[in-house]
Amino acid sequence: MKILVTGAAGFIGGHVAEALAKRGDEVVGLDNFNDYYDPAKKRRNAQRLKKYPNFRLAEADIRNREQMFALFAEEKFVAVAHIAAMAGVRNAVAKPALYVNVNLNGSQNLMDAALAAGGLENFVCASTSSIYGNTKTLPFVESDPCDRPIQPYAASKRAAEMLGYSYHYLYKLNFTALRFFTVYGPHGRPDMMPYLLAESIYKGVQIPLYEGDMRRDWTYVEDTVKGVVTAIDRPLGYEIINLGRGEPVALADFIDKLEHLAGRKANLISKPKLAADMYVTYADISKARRLLDFKPSISVDEGVKRFWDWYQKEQAELASG
Image (cartoon, rainbow, N blue to C red; front, side, top):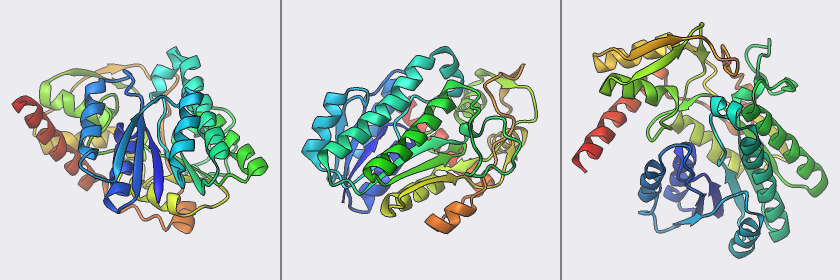
């Protein structure tokens, strides 16, 4: 099966592309290597994928309609795993137009290109737990209206989900939106808390710790990827599905686990909670279990250990050149 993976040089996209290539699919990985974080890190991610003969990298931007139409016309994809996005809840507050352009308009370009080329059996789109905003419903359930996003990142993602429904209704596009919950693990984004914590512990870098009883549904990337791959294989018409562990853990406890493994403390400085931040994320994963046979198997204790082992190895490799 020929599959397009957008954001293939990024954290989750790279893992998805690798999982598909390992099982023998023909994978085209798309990325524009933007500078939201160091493009060199993305280049390293892409490099590890090039060892698979059935993987090809396409360097392009989903905002460019002509490029997307040409790519789909040439490749005739059977499925799309659309992971690319402008990420970062806090950065979106400063640059809302950019987030709408990439996350909504870019997603529309992909769907339009897929319809024009024909033959696409399934479109799987990465979404986010941030969509739930300040909902009072716990755990988060997919039937929640999600009509009060508290920052532009979540609003752009919710808009893409809704546009996906329109394309399913009008054009019969199979569209599954997967709402990710605080994914962490090897090759993680350097702006996310696990990586920032590791940097602080390993290098003594000072990082902010925002006040409040923050709890997150920490989900190890291997579990998330299994959910994505199954969703690719199962056209479901139109569905929105949570992919989390269903087990929120306090940020303070996550920090303790990492510090205990390292035998050192992070260099943290207390900061007031930001308006764009949520206090808790907590996934109801009953729908994922039913539709995707989703069974997250990596505990937070095990996930933190795997992540810390990888981080130390990466730093040693970077130091040796």
